[in-house]
Image (cartoon, rainbow over all chains, first blue to last red; front, top):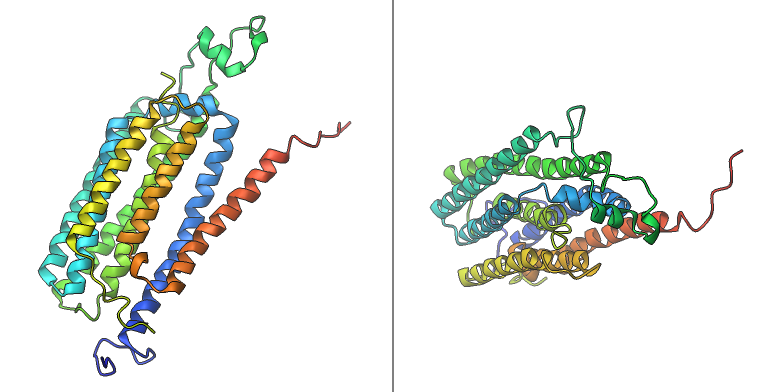
Length: 241
Length: 104
């Protein structure tokens, strides 16, 4: 197979195959640094969760598994539609690329809409870190016993099961991590609009569809981040209550 | 170079099966969160997430049909992540080993 005269082949590449592998390698290098970027947030999360496990569990119970689970399904479904968009690009089916990307945009918007509902609920309940943060600690004997974690807790003064400040740390992580994730999705939706525009201009062919393929990698990566965020933020200590 | 390597186009069926598998694992991760496994709860949750991420990377992100160098870069991202966690956690874990000298 001779690709040497393809109009899609840039002069500094040997073949379309090499060109394709180079672009995909470059995208993976970007994703590797994205792993480190989100990894820093996850690392901080692990440190503070180890320090205040009860506070993190109590704070996690403030989040809605219904909304979080719904969004997980929406995002994984959007990964499927993007995978099908890339497949359509491989087959050179322009209208299908556009169709699957429009579906992905809709799913992304649904995800962000749910996120808005969740954020505004946190705002109303004064769970956004800052001067308006207000979490009422529960004073219960059981919780006291658990939080001190000792047998000689009887002669202690009643102490809150968790300290509001520690709950606030959880919400700082919640907003930083889900916010950064949502920002990636907003950028992704912008990229999709650009790629749809390119598709309408007939820029893609079975031998060249790098923007679609690389965007697919980006969107799947954003999905992977959520796959970790969902259990680590929404599902902590659910077996306790 | 293997010219066929990237021309492999997965059938739609593969993507549907991958999607279903991810849904099943999502269901399991929610269910298992309500089971009392003691300190294993977090371990199980993260393990399921790692399995799901691997499935996404292998099938949706085409590592299955990617060049070896691409797979190495993907793996390098994970390895550096492990290095960052290992060094950070060894610091926090070891801080209590050496008692702080009384400053005054």
